Length: 335
Image 1 (cartoon, rainbow, N blue to C red):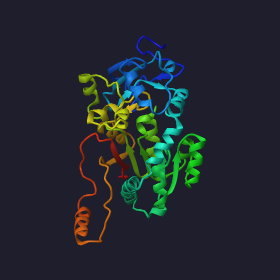
Image 2: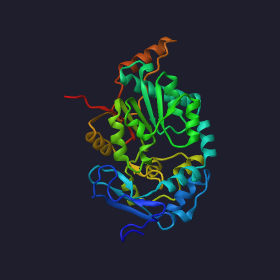
Image 3: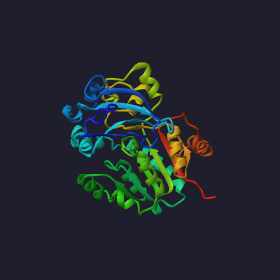
């Protein structure tokens, strides 16, 4: 153990003693519990019970601690996994077989159309022909977004770890590049979907990605809601929202908020103020907080034409409710 303040197993975890976005030291702790004791144990166990195996010996001796930074308002887990533990989380606790099957099930026409419609909007913001767009999928996963971007004509690169992901990407005509390689590259669109909540050093990674963005930088993360107030008033849940969803339950807004601070994986929860802070530090401009899709025009009937016309004439982006977890940024124009 390291000191009298933090309790963690240094073989598998390390402490983030400052805010991982702004390096502030004024974070306020609002929750603490051992990872292997209730309610956190139940939260973890219910999440992975259908996915893989949890080695509780590796979690023993480490506290789950939440702080809220008073400078950038990031909510973050203090004790975070080291590389060996990260491998265990994403390759054992989340077993490759069930995950691959889930991703295959998600490859539906409905999902394709949803992704294509959203990407159409992002492509339009570049002002370029789709075949001239360079697209970085930071967090390639199993390629649901990257394969659609390539199908729309873009030159697509991905960031991901593991030889299996590289093989899968190669089969789709997508090049997996390293973190070191992207520092010397430029991209019209930098795309991150459910990635930044997982990062150990999100402030550093945001700055790196902002530097290589020519037109559009998309960040989509879980919606945090009023998670600090929720935890302080009602305590921590002992059931994963994923387990509830798989069991057929309809998720509430509170469930979504608990999901934003899921132990071990969702290490960071972002509010609008956090993203605004990051934008101000990287010379980026936040242009939308709404996941809006480009209108898909069907002129087969007069009624459809009227409906489509109204949608086209309406603003592409409308003001959304705060802290929805979706952000589109662009480089700020030079003076």
